[in-house]
Length: 176
Image (cartoon, rainbow, N blue to C red; front, side, top):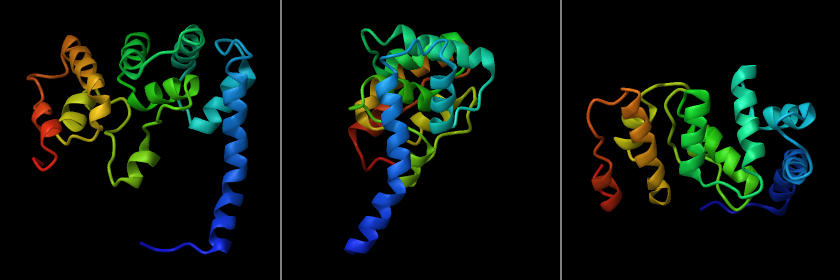
């Protein structure tokens, strides 16, 4: 393992200063504004998380974020509600919604997965949960409930022809 110098740590912290300020603003403001209609919050959130979706999708997403503020939401429920409202399986945006309302929850996106040399299928892929997440076992065991929901939703929409065989992969980490 490489050892970082004090100078390298200071440089890294300086690079994080602006992104951390942007993240802190979002975390503070989500509770103070009606995010379903607040243009500034939506613009900053979209910039920070690189949201590149149309207005209809954004209205549904920010409406869901606003409606779940009072009680919070877990990942499987967020995944299902986004799929129903937006018509797509959006694991990354489901995790961002959950993490915005509960900072102790993880964000699952290409940057986080890239650190572990893993990747999600292309956004909007209708076979996302079946083809990649299940067969390659990319999501940690802690999120296995999302597999059930994603598979159920994708079967309802006719995206999967047969159930994925991910359960055996969760039991045995060496079964790849």
